[in-house]
Length: 241
Image (tube, rainbow, N blue to C red; front, side, top):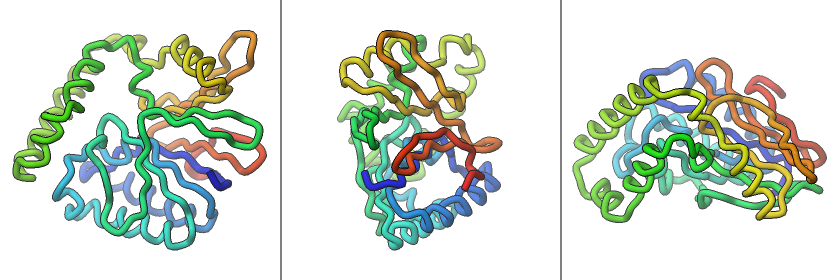
């Protein structure tokens, strides 16, 4: 990846929160001035059902902003989240789609990037639903049903998921740091960057090898991003220059 590298996720853009879109669009304009690489680490949109959604009024400004960022020479990468895993492309946006886990090198650091939902092992019900929704027959069904039907289904699933989360023990919805350490050791990496759980923390993992987990904060109040400037890595707020 060409530095500077900026990683952002869990923006959860939707028509219900226009102020979040306003802040994100302003943030994107600043990223075009930075150059380098912009990694979209999933759940950029609160829901995405595929064909037809790019014509939604609240989506068009985001597409245009990403086009401008790319036109300034920024490389755009997308790692799907649990809300926008059906996003394959955006019209006119040169977007490289990543798998669930990516290994790379930033300077002297070996880095893993993942949306983060696979690390929440305390919620097996979600993990089973994740597997079901991503199986080829279900994905294919989303592709052939009328857009209005699929949108209604996605919004219903979003409401059901929100109610289910409210009933769960939040301690079970955090990252499994034991699994994170296992991933890091298996990949011979020392830094893992994730989102999904919205905590915005820097977690130092104990053990013979020093390793760190940086978790993005969601954009409900102030978003968090991870930046690699060519020498160091930092977890910062959205307003940081």
